[in-house]
Length: 77
Image (cartoon, rainbow, N blue to C red):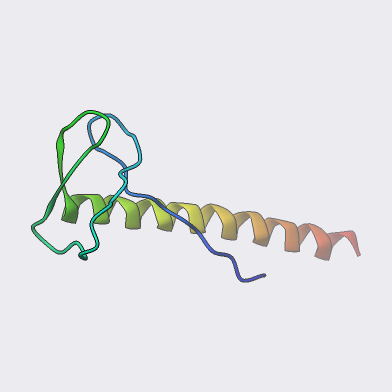
């Protein structure tokens, strides 16, 4: 299995667009981020939790595909 990078962006809960964080400061627990598309305020902690879950799902899907490919190669021999 190769080293794979996954890039997950924070998405607005209301409209689903990617949030472009233009601030130089780091976001921290309790912050709210305003969506540039719809103007709604999003809770940073909830956004982070959702991004972590999306990352886990992306990794699980990738790993299943890699394992499936390895098993195909084993049974071809």
